[in-house]
Length: 240
Image (cartoon, rainbow, N blue to C red; front, side, top):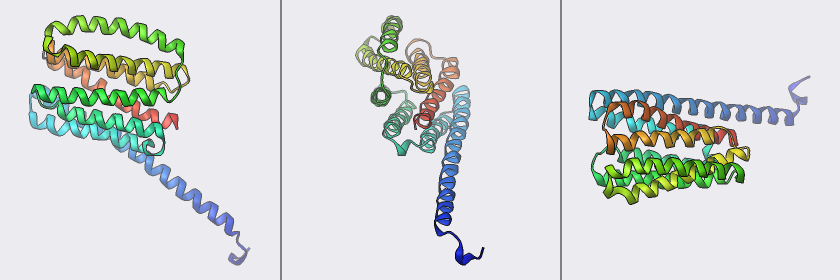
């Protein structure tokens, strides 16, 4: 058949499919780039922590955090309400990471507030997926026990920080309850896994800050934290 009798609708459809494939491929490349950025930044950060090199910490941590933001955009965070709320939470986490590079109390408070508001964003995002009452109640009971034990452990080491730390613990507990409840309502597994890993990583932070400063805390806490943020970012693609 000559070009004069070619089906213009078929040509348009083929071009549309080509554009769609190109956009999807670019997004996949973007989330892979973000994941690589996070891994590379984490390696630099951990080496800087191990060797006590502030310049490496200052370079590695923001780069690793930028990576999970890039990954989230690659996973489609700008294309849905859930994704946009998660991206806001990730951004606040990245901002908190920058604040926590400094040891001064005011920067710790600023980082704590950033993460707290970020967890509120996660609660809103996870709750938007639907909540199973049974799983949420079970998670609430478990988290109440866990937070009580952690509070009894941490508060004697930081009596002047009881109020901000207590508020943060309450909000991160709510995030875990929302995540597990959402999973019970068919949310992807990355939601509860990310939330629980994030919570576990915070134990390393408070231990390092208030109980016993040691590279060991950062050696397991930082990888757990960045894996948690990447899982939460990945949930955007699974939710769609």
